[in-house]
Structures are given as structure tokens and as C-alpha cells.
Length: 105
Image (tube, rainbow, N blue to C red; front, side, top):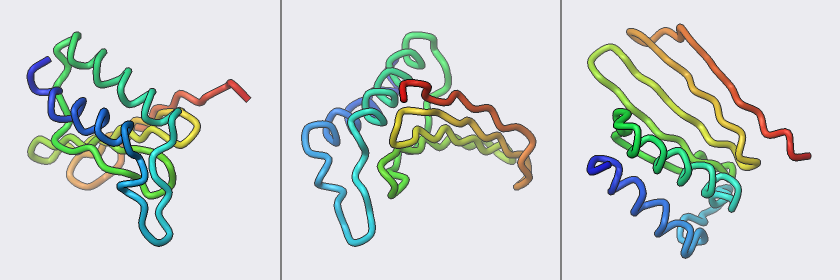
């Protein structure tokens, strides 16, 4: 869980004041994306899954976790509605995409 602490701390900070990310043409993370990202971070930490090196706003109400190790690069994008997409790249080429769509609507 130790490696996830900075990510979890950032998510908590954004949740307290999501407007701190507001800028021209940027939508702050939604409550749904923050909740989903926090849940993924807690589960990842408890499961000893490698933690992302970065968590950033996707500028459209969502959040992106980024992880890289040599030629491997992975993103977990949490969209504004809480849907999640994992993309895996090797040497700059996409080789896997997995999505969990939010069916609450």
C-alpha cells in the first residue's frame, strides 16, 4: 500500500477541492471519476499491484493513472461517468485495450 499513498493523497486533495484543477477548457474530475479512482487505488494498494508513477486529470472530468517500465507503458483512464479503460503499450504500440463501462444510466 505504501507506494499508492501519494496517489491516494492526491485524489483526496482533488476531492476536497476539485476546482483547483479548473483552467480554460479543462473540466475538473467529477465525483464519479474521483470515487472510482480512489476505489481502484485502495484495491491496488491492498492487492500489492504496482502503483502508477502519475495520476493526472484527463481535462474532461476524468483521471488517468500512468505506469511505465522500460518499453512497457500502461494507462488506466477513469472517465467522467466512472467508466474505466486500461490501455497497454509496448515500444509505443498499443497491444491491449480493456474497458469496463458504467451502466448506471
